[in-house]
Length: 467
Image 1 (cartoon, helix red, strand yellow):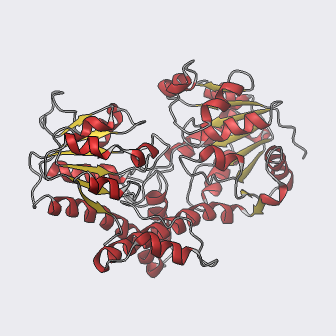
Image 2 (cartoon, rainbow, N blue to C red; image 1 turned 45 degrees about the vertical axis):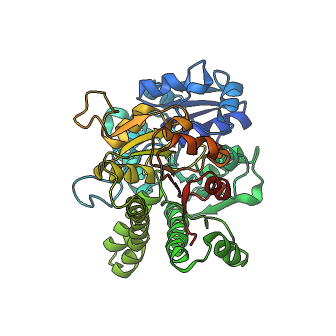
Image 3 (cartoon, rainbow, N blue to C red; image 1 turned 180 degrees about the vertical axis):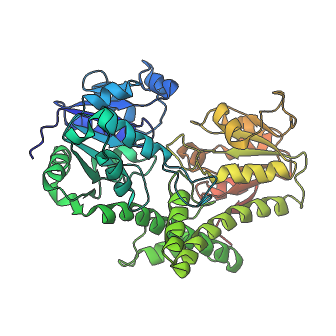
């Protein structure tokens, strides 16, 4: 069957659906793209006239939204209506780790994927291409196919035909727009040639054909999990070496440059830090561990579990170093926190190492003064599960929110750089030092500060991965 794609529906207006569909709309002006979500607040934010209030911060995103929104790109809550008029439907819903039941703590919870498939089965017209874009366990397409093709007299499913493809995203938050404009590859998994060609034609409007890779469904699904696992493994590996560098007097940047110059290794993902975060790495590795155990591959499961264990160890290690450097106690001591998002150029805090480190320091009795250029006070409050100081909390002295990085230094004993925002590499350390209580410490977990200037200002410094 030949497909003529005029209407696309994307279920899910989050970090994947919003940017991905914006790029498709930008490069395919003749196709109407509806991004739908039941979260009314999120859809309202996507439609806000003030583009600085978009629910997702990504450099370059608001410029695309300005060009396409309400022309061929629409953000709606009318899920059923948008499904009914679509020729192609992307599933971009959340797939969190299960919190209870079989596989709790490891397996992905596919409740939203299944709900989306049932809505599609009920409301879609015939000959619709359904595309998995959420990060999902291998063989999930079989579940979607079963739901779509089951017999249901009420919705006349016997008169419909669905074509299921896997098209995982490989976006890095903070550089998602550039990743979409210039992808390393576009992966399409499926078993129907015509439906694959229909999706390929959409991408070919801006992506060279040589970058489009075709696989079967299961290879495509597993490739996403494997890619994230391999990237996370590199982060955990270099973080383990950062600790050895601190003990031996080596410099982790120099080590990373030396090994990254080897063409077999390359320099990507060899930057040390407080641990990886974001929505994917931990969740996907846990899912991989679960799958390996499910198929009886215990040794493989243990290997990938160790990647996660090293990441947790790195975060706890930093918390302990901070306490030890501050004379073994931080009770009632003020500590400035620079950065709360899991990486720069995003407002996403999911699995951010900042959360665990801040919780550790609060548990030790510190008063935190937190600043992040894009993360709101409400998000920090939600992540820490503690209200801001003086806001009817049982722990009213645990943390404060600040809108300026220099305010975090006032009467503080230490400053901790936890996110690599560019403004943190250009700090006036003389000014910072004049505001802090002496002796004053700076802990740089991202290796972005000017250490010489900090030390010349009278500050004690600790730099991750440097003896």
